[in-house]
Length: 397
Ligand SMILES: Cc1ncc(COP(=O)(O)O)c(C=O)c1O
Image (cartoon, rainbow, N blue to C red):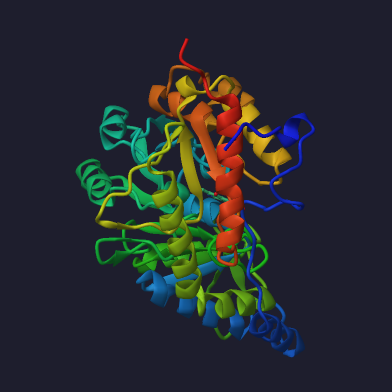
């Protein structure tokens, strides 16, 4: 292809309207389910919540699911249920949405950032090991983009040190490690049902666990910290530790349950597109693909690539701007958490803390991926990438 004028410089864009990086899939059955819930006697904390929780627990392979208002509330409830407090440290990743570490901060505890594995972009267990102190209480790992972590290694570390193992699985509902579904790999697993995620309830989240004691505490966290003394006298209750209002409504749960029934279909569509991206991009001199270990079923929330900046004359942000101008909604997941002003100020973190994550972040690009995206949409992404790369290719001097 001859070098075509980039839309960034006034040329015609590859497509007339923006292709977003994510989009929810709502069908007539979803709308009917929400309507039925709204016409019922309960619009919050009715039977729809339990039905959604049972459906989710079955898919996640866990004994308990507790639905909450969003994925951030799920993380917060998990940290509350873990009993984290001001003297505690939680080892986590910096390559995540800030909500992961913020939840630790809400409890007054200290997030400690381990580095990532440069190939999978998930936490590196050797880096985690080096950060263990007598104050470490929990390990909070993220299945970045949807790729399940090496949970067996993380669990071995957690067991050795007596840490609680928490999975932020906002990206990986429906994923698996070998035959074991996401939801069975940690003590507590949190999900998000934001519209960009793998299923949606508008806003929404949940925590799943096999442990009865943690499930009980999650329910208490969700409902103000209230503990009832006698089921026959529900007007009598006490609060030992203040909780929150993290409740999810019945009509949101109706949407969540209706979506859950299509999770496998959504996953198949995402998987097909992700494999097609990988085939088409495998030989590109301008980018690298994250590793996809054979024992993982990727959740495919995000399709992330790493630019080879040494082959380009511009930085990642210019590539993103050029793709946006072509009407391709490429974006960045994520600015590193330890470099946000709050984390620098409060905890004294700064550059150099996570060298592998810091080297990866300026190279990261998220390409559009969602179940109703067509192959023609995907071809537009590939064409725009070609156009931008040809324009900004570094010529041998
Ligand atoms: C890794 C991760 N954790 C937590 C969250 C928070 O979820 P929510 O937006 O539902 O609060 C998100 C959502 O963007 C996320 O990507």
